[in-house]
Length: 110
Image 1 (cartoon, rainbow, N blue to C red):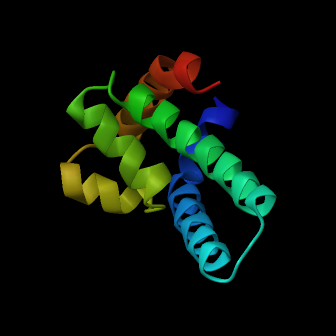
Image 2 (image 1 turned 135 degrees about the horizontal axis):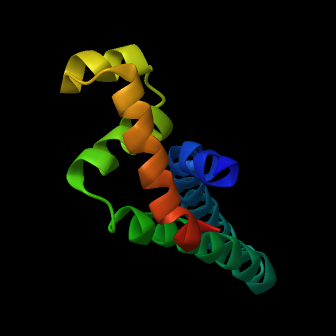
């Protein structure tokens, strides 16, 4: 489950990485970069896109509540006490739902 948590925590960084690669590709195209340079960036971008697609696919099997908890804690990097106030559940209840959700998506992400 540790790998799943880490992958979810990287979600926004991967999205930003994809956008940076797109900018780099545009710059290379405008400034006469080689086809090899552009192709290398396209491969990196495609690999990052696949990671995001795997995560989105995994999250699609979750209930709305499970997804909300994982997004709030891991993707948006918020604190548990904030989630407790938001969804009116105790910390142990949130952790239980989180554990169940992580187990559900583990096979899709790893």
